[in-house]
Amino acid sequence: MIKIDENTPTSDLLSLKENTFIECDNGISGMIKNIDVETTDLFWLFTFMLENGFEIEIRKIKNVC
Image (cartoon, rainbow, N blue to C red):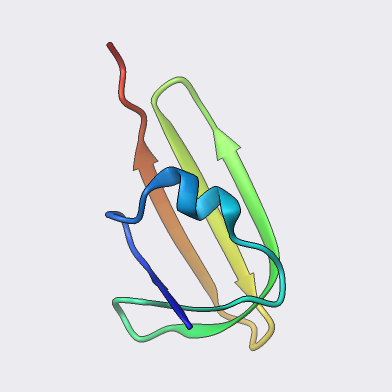
């Protein structure tokens, strides 16, 4: 089981694959069925759809120099 939250490095979130068991701070957990990654100039939005019907959303602010 891999625990994820807003403090999880973006590279770690990008490396997650389907059929991986994940859990977040609010107690939602399950096997990843699908991953949607949206990106803008300001942030990444990761949506992990789980086999049990739940979703975990993680928003990561991009570091802008």
